Every structure is written in C-alpha cells, then in structure tokens.
Image 1 (cartoon, helix red, strand yellow):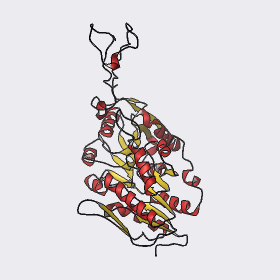
Image 2 (cartoon, one colour; image 1 turned 90 degrees about the horizontal axis):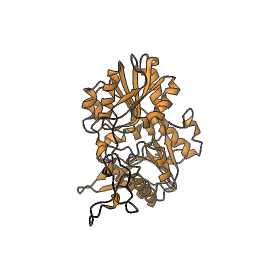
Image 3 (cartoon, one colour; image 1 turned 90 degrees about the vertical axis):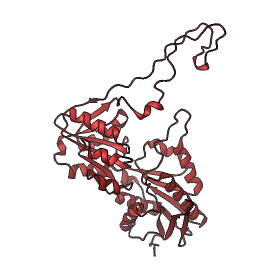
Length: 369
C-alpha cells in the first residue's frame, strides 16, 4: 500500500520513464511507494490520465519534472491535478522543481506574462500548494493565489564546490551579468571567496530583436513640411516644440570587474539552457588568466547543441542539479555533472504534510540567494 501512517500519497505526472527518476528517489527517501496511475498520449497526441487507487480525503503530492516537451508536461500536470480534485483529494500539492515559463515573467512589447497565465491555470486545475526550486525571479510567487515554497539548491552546490573542486580556496565566484551579482555574492560570502562581475554582452545577441535598442527612431524635430503628418510617436504636444534626440542603446563589450588571473573561476546562475553566453564568458575568463572554469547552475536544460558546445569550449565542468532530466546530455558530454536534490524535496513534502515549519530548510540562506 502507498498509504503511510500519516495518510499521504505521492504520484508522478510524467509519461516518460526518464522523467520519473526524481520521483522514485523522493519516494525512496520518504519510505513510501509511488502512487498507482497511468499517464500516456493518445494516438492523436491528447493526454490521458487514469488514477488507479482511491485518494479521497488524502494529501496528494504530484511530482512533475519538465522534459524538453514542456507543453506536454504542463498538460499532464493539469489533467492529473484535475483528476485528483474530482476524486475528492483533500489537498493537491505540486512538486515542480523547475517551474516552466519562468523566464516569461515580464511584459515584452506586445507579448504576455505567460508565467502568470500558468499560475492561474494550475490554481483552476485544483492545486492548493506548490513546492519549487530557485524560481528565475522570486517575485513570481506573487502570481499565485495559494502558498509557494521556493526552495534553494545553493547548499548542495556549495557542498559540491567544497568537496569536489581541488584548491577551491583559490577560486573566485563570477557573475555572468550584473543581474546575477546578488546570487554570486551570496555564494562568495558563504564560501569566503572573492567576487568578479562580467559586464557587457557579445556584439551579436539574441535579445537585440526584442529589447528595443533601435527604437524609437532617432528623430530630433517634431514638425515637417506643410501638409505632412508625422507619426504619433514623433509628434510634440505643442506646435514648434522640438523633442530631444532619442539615441539607440549601445552594447558595451564584455569586461570583467575583478581579478581572475591565476584563479579558478566559478560562474553561478540559476538556469543553463543555450550555452553560447557561458562559452563566450569562459573564453573571456581564460584570456584574463583563469586556469580552470566551472559553471554551477540549478536547472540544466541544456537545449539544442549545448553538450557539443560545452565539450568544445574552455569550460572544464558544468554542475547542475537533477531538477530537470539530462541523462542524454551527460552521455554526449562527460563535462556535465549532477548533484542530487531529492533530499530537500522529500523533507519539504514531509514537513508540509505534518504541518511543520519550513524554516529549517532555509537556514543560512541569504535573502538575495
């Protein structure tokens, strides 16, 4: 039986075997069996979920790791949550170590805040609580109408640095961009190491098309020849008034603030997906004298050609947690290493079900981490 003394059950909402590995590790630590359910795709790619045991009046934890097929994983989670809700489960807690669409949490031109939409969908499906890890922006928690526990992977990554990196005392923590400086500072303070920050970006960047650097056009005057109407963006509120010149933003070249010469450089971030920026950063650090380069990240999405680019780059090792399945990428690139975080996820499940404080899981965690 999957019902323990405390009366809770743990299900996996994934239809692929590789994605259930984390769920199995968590249930082993909890000493319970994985709930009996079937999740599969119909011939027309519709998702079907069948729960094979009673969940009435129980606390249900749904573990959902996100593979490359993000949208299918989301539908699996929504359908399972709704199936459990209609089966009279008392509480439905989603354990989503990597929360998808977390990068789309801000308005971009005529886009949308997809992360807020997903939060609303999860609430409508029946979820009453979420356990996640290292949200891309902590403010995402405000999108939800129910409690969110945003766990941290930094203690596990710091332990890896201390135990697996020889001479780590000669290392410097590097922020790949100023926006990652607070996270890097948190690592540096706990490890008692120096801090370096990389500023600028490559001259060819994917964000050029979306960030408005070349908009609005550089127009100084607000009037034109008689009878010629200027676009509304260029019109002044009063005739004859000149608008100031609107200069396009410029991209400064990549520079490193801090000394990395003769040191081990450890770049920390929350997500490593497309690795071009990390590869470019590693080349700059090598030029500045760093003799070893490590990358520490919570979520190893490692999309597209990431394994090949890492293998061919100056990066010595990429360390990620198992919040996202990446066994195939590890086979393609031996530089990729994995840190297991199932322990803290299992402890969070136990504490939430027993009504215990979660403060213990956040001890020694800085506010900016």
